[in-house]
Length: 259
Image (cartoon, rainbow, N blue to C red; front, side, top):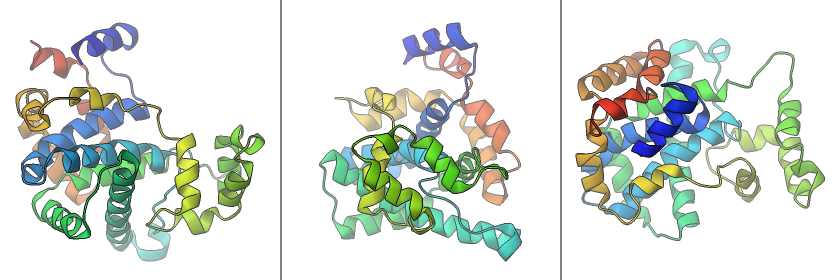
């Protein structure tokens, strides 16, 4: 990680904002706030949860899933509550999907327990929710229709072997993007937008994940600063940009564990 920090900071300065970097930093924060909960459930459940946190950034950025409730339809507070509840459903459906892709198994009973405990004891879902919402709106433009956007995103795929299933998604995007679960169509097309590798996994590969989180990751950021941001993001997203600028500052790596 430190060599990655050095290479990145030499190329880009001390901060480079793209989906992967934001997702990496957000997932590091997520690991800190969920570690104690996952101790009783084991490393597979913990790792797949972090994969979920990371990969959903790309799902929302590409608008494979959307936040369907608009302020103009429900009022700001009600729309936020409805979108948050929908986000939680979407998140845990994707968590199940990640298990299916990694070849690991989780029982329905254990999934229910994990979900209940996370929602009761962890506030990390609020910065995740705010970040995904911001990414979800990144490519929206009043002059570009949703169908046109998807046609641009999947321009090459529409000319390849998978053109039929991509065309099915584009033609019926309103149905697919507004569902909290993941159909076979979305499962197929997600392979075109998800990254080929998850770099953060090398932090934990063949290691005691809980020890890595405790001894390395927890020392990267100032917990008191993160706590304040999370408390603020619980209420609204006014501090989201400041939060993202803080967690994506490469200098935290140099000044903390690697100093």
